[in-house]
Image 1 (cartoon, rainbow over the protein chains, first blue to last red):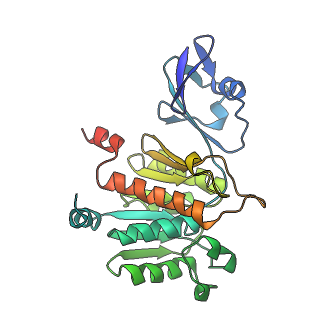
Image 2 (spheres, helix red, strand yellow):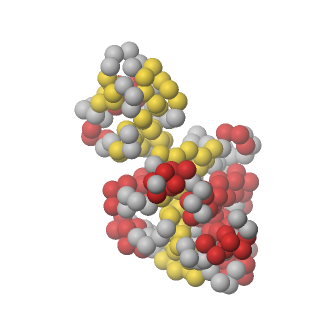
Image 3 (cartoon, helix red, strand yellow):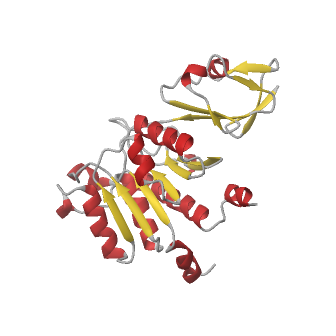
Length: 67
Length: 202
């Protein structure tokens, strides 16, 4: 399947993937993450259950110090 | 648009600035220079000598509340800006209350936990409002790593990589770039030239 991840097209095997699987596959291991799928924010407690499907638009934002 | 036309639009607009450090102070000044109508400034901190390497304050303002010092500095540039100040450590209910009537909110906090808090507040309680965040501006150089990206009403400015560290301090040039990118993104929204904005109005 193909998804849009941070504005880039990414390909994964299979036709769905959980947020946690996606984070592992892309080695996103940061502490303070914000994840949006098709504009909906996903809570940390839902990373194992929330599913990303073919064609979804996923934003992974790593909040870091500085301002 | 001429500058006169731009000022006519901007004088009717209110921008919330959440945090008055390097991002907030410089972003607020940029918006004041181009004629924003009202700014809502919030920060609990005092001006310290260590802030002067990047924040829009002066040596003789050390020890003052940042919101008071910033209001003074903005009035010296443009006395027509209306300014509301809040010298508080913002919590989620404060954000909803004091920024509820803003046209756009600028996130200018230092700590990631605070950045998360305002993102969560806007996303869950102020869904129509644009939030312009600064993420990653410590260090120096690497101009071309600094970028803007957007997801609906959320706009991110910064390199999204360089957190503050002992060997990677926040410094005027890079912090100023990101602060002014945030101000530039605010203008795009307020002047109706932000693509997503035009899209949502159609």
